[in-house]
Image (cartoon, rainbow, N blue to C red; front, side, top):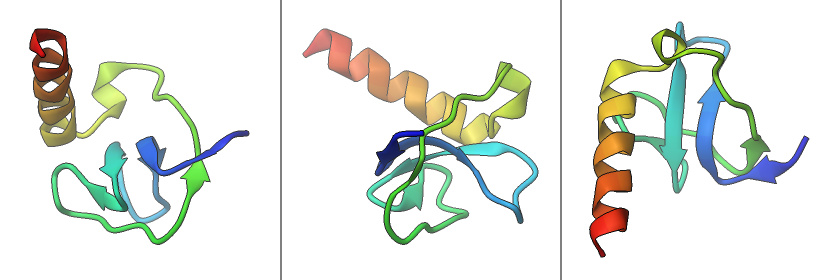
Length: 65
């Protein structure tokens, strides 16, 4: 697996996947130190709702720029 610093990751103490940027989840509930294995949740229901909304917003912003 590829080590990355941004993307979806699942932590042992979390019930959903969270999206991390610069070590912090977009929902601000989790913190990671260093890189992690790149992984992709199977469905949207596996993703944190707050992170999912913020990722959609970031993708929309990047398309308009």
